[in-house]
Amino acid sequence: MTTPLYSLDSAMAAEARGTSPVLLYALDGFVDAGMAAGLAIGDFLGHGDARRVVTFDVDELVDYRSRRPPMVIGEAGWEAVHTPELAIDLIRDAKGTDFLLMYGPEPDVRWEAFAGAIGDIAGDLGVSQAIGMHGLPAPTPHTRPLRVTSPATGVALVQGEARKAKVQVPGSAQALIDYRLAERGIDSKTVLVHVPHYLSVLPYAPAAVALLERVSQVSSLDFDLSRLTAQAETTGRDIARQIEGSSELEEMVRDLERRHDERNGSGLLALPGEALPDAETIAAELEAFLAEQSRSDDGDHPSES
Image (cartoon, rainbow, N blue to C red; front, side, top):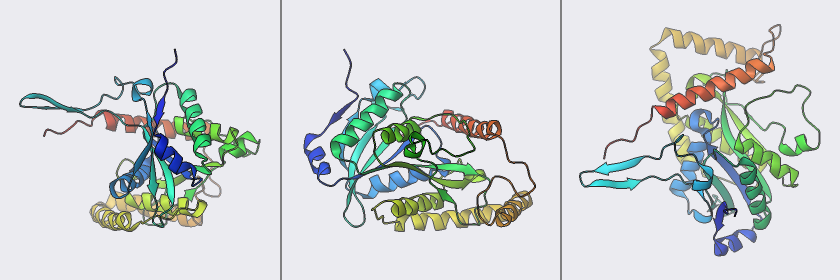
């Protein structure tokens, strides 16, 4: 007997169907340099009127031994367990337009079943567009405008419009969703913000701002970015103070600025006359970043309360 992967609130689903909503999604556990998508989702959930539409069964999708849920113990014994949550909420943007937001841990298992469930949900709710979001570590300085890209979408890949240069990288459930939604004929894309690699493991609010600005450009949505913008300004001042006291960091930033300016902000991986990194090198860099994220996650422990 197959266990359903999710439950759907029929009343909220009916409300969503009437709006042909955009679906935004970002899952924890893969690449999100600077916590760009994570900060954006936190801002939505912390200041919006999120209404639950879909709740996924995390017992069917998450390996608790690889990501143990934190539990709180007090004087009288166990007080709470913070079970992971994987869900889709209905939220309103700054103009009152409803959109769907999927967030939570990347499933450890049943990726194809999960992607298929997202396709079924998108079809049932009349999703007009699906947009994945995350940050990508890049050799770029924080003193220059962040580059945001939308690489070849799942639609382009399905239709055989892939780029001439092909790179094989570690897969993700989020990328699989993009690909499978495209196979169903749903307009799907991923928006990436290129985050300075030396800031990639820290919360970097400027990346969240740039990410949502691009999402607004490629969709019908409009966001209140005032809180994230204020946070970005504070982050910028803090970074400037830390770099000012280190000649090594100052030299690194100057070198990145030179390379950025010589590329005219194109985001190319190599300057004219330099060898372009091969696919194996790019994949290795990505895997190294994922390993660093894993080590950071292993070092996180719930604080005492």
